[in-house]
Length: 492
Image 1 (cartoon, rainbow, N blue to C red):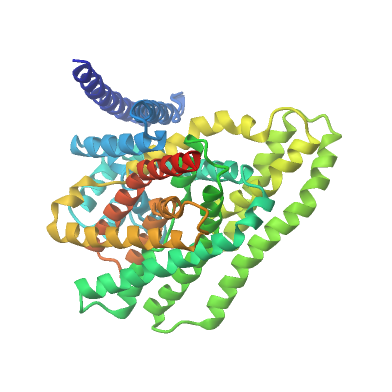
Image 2 (image 1 turned 60 degrees about the horizontal axis):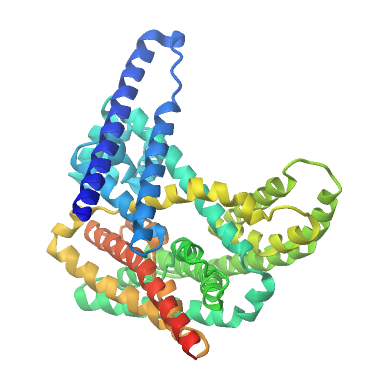
């Protein structure tokens, strides 16, 4: 009886969510229509519909996270599931806002194509996406709620990117430079093995499934499997309050090195696809940039931060700890982007060198405590948004399913093997599982390959399934392996 009531409430929530979202879109269409007639006399605030969507996504994240905690799973898994269910149900009901939100990567490319080629968004949608998905997106963009849906997507996309930066900054705050040095060699070995194993296995799998595939295509698809999304693993460790474990530090350190290696590998295989040759000079420049940023950011930050903090300690600026901390994280994220690296690398580096000096020089609440409300507000929205990118209709194609199964198996085995690089005293299986999720990183690699013509629609769909499976498997498996490791340590 109780399970029936819970199922009814869950369905009621889903129905209410779509009713509110549809009402929001309809209301926004009326507002746009009135605004076009009233001109400058209209006082409608365009941010109002965006606020309601954020409230609905936040509510879904809270309920999904609470549901997962009830069954003993990390909250992040519930946020991903809620996003997946809401987006696919909304798409089935032809809800325009969710139709745009679930095509995040495509929408970014659609806007770029429309701006660069001076064409409409609907024309760009037909060029970027195959039919019927492209036709559905084009119809949505040309409909009365198209401008609203684009505005909501743009805001949610930017907010989710900021959320990842905040999350990785918090992760860096929980990891000191001294601890990173102690696991530095292990992190490097894990990262190297976690890149090489999926690359080789992916290349072999593609060559076996499609013997006619070009060398460049097989190598590029193998490169897609090397990506690691540290955001999901970091959130699981935070939910389980295990961020200070040696395994967590090794995974986070390996993820940073993995990003550098992935960037270099992406540059190499992209050059192979475009020109047929690889420029040693280009690869060397990218390598030096990546290493220069990491060494420089940590080294300079460790030297400069104490001096700035002591100077700030003499001032009476209100909330100086919060302002300087976020400002420092955002600045290093920007610098990382200028070096051609992911912004999350800069945020993680900022956290590595900051918290210890703040605790020593500025009294009061820790920076982690000050950022906790911000994390609770925006980080769940990112994971709901990531779940919305999963397209369940891709499972209807048997060839896509076969390719997805093979790529998923290779992706899982390739990262599990990386755990063998850890010392025997640590839980190698937990490290391997923690390196499994691809998340948005794998999708970014796949979208680049699609732009180069290497990744077909079928391969892209298979990659999406692989990303979905590895993303959803990591939280429960990591929870199981960590619990097993703790029980063994207690028994010993």
